[in-house]
Length: 345
Image 1 (tube, one colour):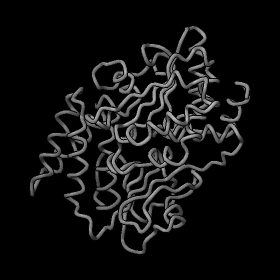
Image 2 (image 1 turned 90 degrees about the vertical axis):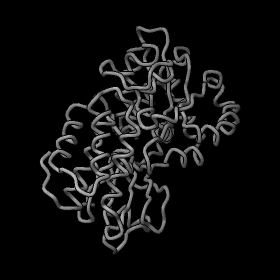
Image 3 (image 1 turned 180 degrees about the vertical axis):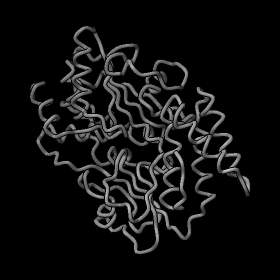
Image 4 (image 1 turned 60 degrees about the vertical axis):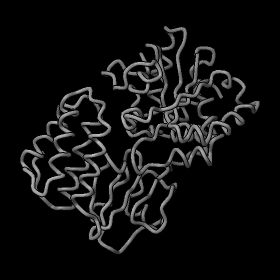
């Protein structure tokens, strides 16, 4: 395929990244290609960090569609002018590296992948801090051997990424979708990971604009019991009650289902806050100190709710990166949508 053909197909498909930001893939590809015109080299990174609790889509895709993922990387390498792409980093968490490295190497021996085989380099995601180690600018710092913390944007990785060179970073599902797009087989579907209080947990593929309620019904996971869901991740996802499921699943499209009667309010909030407190990289004081204070407060039998939500609000407004800024999402939405409390954001 020519460069014009592949980018046109991506544009016509309306393909958006599946890593959480939903940024148009065609815009990112064209931005990297434009930046490479004035640079001698650039990089491609496959992000298979998958550090969000309750999300296992990458594992499923790599296990079942490895060839498609590598083909998506091959297409990106070709579009960006193969001789300008110095290295292709496969950034995987340690479990995925152990599970898939041999299979990836075997797949790369195929003639189709000859042009990218020698460029491939594995990089293991650090175990701690796990969450922020999956953020794209933090990944750049990690590969460069720098401190594990996100970068200030702009500049964006597509212009000045790894070693200040143009860098294309996409997650596993996005490269899979690109492979389908290249053959005109992409039809607007995406992967959903359904977990929690359900009969049939696992990964499913439905249309991306399907309401959450319909996703649960078609997968055989809808229940008549009183329940609520968390969409987009078990830590950072938004919490919705069973009457709010007429919207599509955004971000990573994971759906965690909770039985309302059997869910311990304190334990759930403690789980969220403990995760954020543990995963904070410590770069900014509001995240470092705020997550600690919130966790200490929720451990008590009684706590000052006014002060609690003042800290939550501060995290939303002043955190440097997505970790601290996303903490208010599950907290606010749980109190508003499930507990039905009036919260001033």
